Length: 238
Image (cartoon, rainbow, N blue to C red; front, side):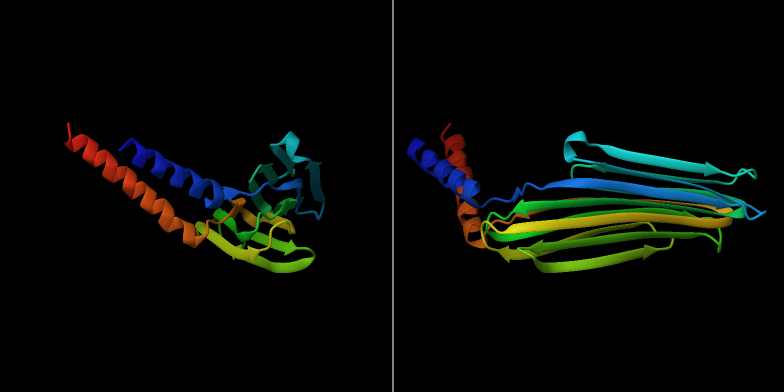
């Protein structure tokens, strides 16, 4: 019985260490930028903007900026970047004026592929509110992946309106070991309104994984079955 258990554990350890999904290390930098503006009834423009760039070692990054007009209209822009997640938010209140806020967060990184199937996963969520027909809320998600200078894919996804949205995007590639890959992702938020209020908060989590080969999954399942069978016999013998 002990020999069977040891043999099963060796099978599990071997299959897991060779093929089980594991995150691929991304080395890169983050960018955060935003701007807000309020145009009052006299045509005067109040505006502000910010930019922030830092290497991942100083995460989390964040930036905010805000503008308030004489009529108490306001626009606020906010963003945060952490390891594997980007957030962009905008909030506007236009009391008889036009108020606009925009925010963008960006990650640009590189990685070395372990070989075999490699999967990119994006978890997107959007939470928006618009006060009336003059309000606008938009979220833009752009992402691209390249290998040795060749573009594997490049997508731009625009989300408009006030419906809360959650989506998962999966892209899988069969890449050679040692290939130098680059990954870029941008997340932006826009809120704009007149004589009303609007806000938009959007976020995306991202990661690149080494995908287990299908041929090794039966081995892993067989090992788990042997462990369960051995444990059942041991319990029944008591």
